Length: 135
Image (cartoon, rainbow, N blue to C red; front, side):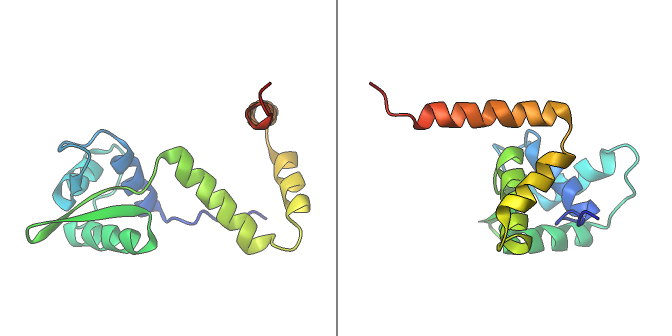
């Protein structure tokens, strides 16, 4: 059985908001994030204070960056979607497969779709080509 995501439903929704274009030069206020979440179809409404608490906790975890703006804070994603995904995968390997990473990686690839395996092959080939010394 695969472990659950490291982020809860509200945290994932907040990250989706923070990865979208911000109304103010890349930084989001709690009010902006709260409004963006409320505008998402099918999302139940979260209290403003809940969104504020989640953003503060996510900043503490390093998932988002926090910048003071007077008495308030502004937030932005701590990295791109791709960087965060890679970090979560690396953390899972470090936490659960520290003794036998190879077996964990083989199991991961074994559960991947054919398209994902093709993407992995292409990524490995590109990395190996970049690492080769140039003549």
